[in-house]
Image 1 (cartoon, rainbow, N blue to C red):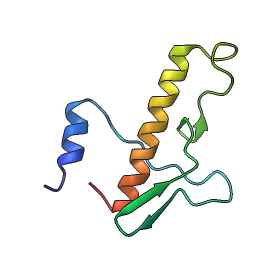
Image 2: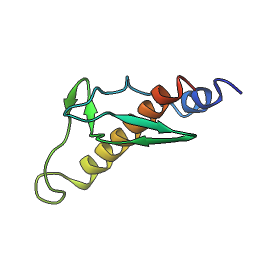
Image 3: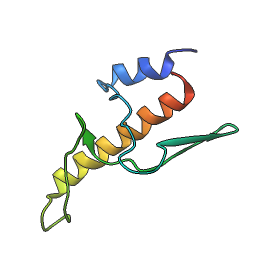
Image 4: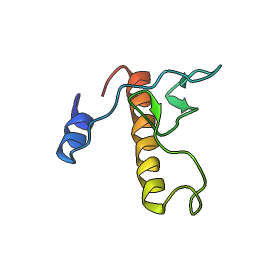
Length: 86
């Protein structure tokens, strides 16, 4: 069973980024029992926030969708770090 999640992500062409370090005074995740709580995730790639602004004014819908996808990948990367792997 180990590696199944990584294998499925690879089949989808998805590579998880390195978990982002906390950008302020918080921890990126906390494990409580069998639950992982993730906080403070932003659309960060290569250590930089990729999108800021209001959708429809400063940010297009397509840019917002790409940012949301990046946030989801960053959340998965934090969960992977919390779980010690796959």
